[in-house]
Length: 124
Image (tube, rainbow, N blue to C red; front, side):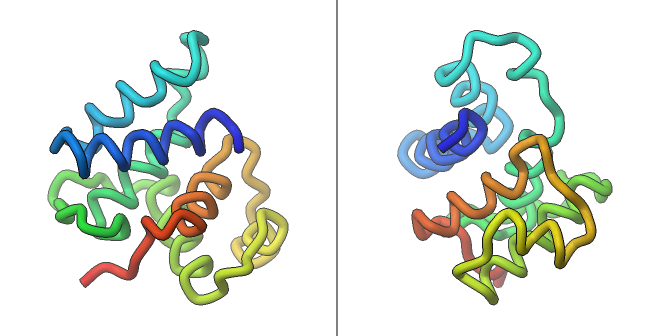
């Protein structure tokens, strides 16, 4: 599991266990898995996690769609989540083919790992 997936799992746990906001949880989690400043600032993994959190895709996390900006990254995260939820065996390659975008920033891995851990759900 890559650093961004580890950060997403840790951030989810922080939201559930410590009632942190998704943004604060992500910032704390990414800082705990890497010392690299450039890795901490990487936008795609953060945008993926925040889109899933704010749009109701994280189990037991209240959605706040008004906080989510509708960006290409957020839209891609939601599309990847929908595919993984409907095809639980989805791989990085499957998502790349289905979405027409080859992710090299860890976004698909975040979605897949959250699903594998049972943290991904369809929004209510």
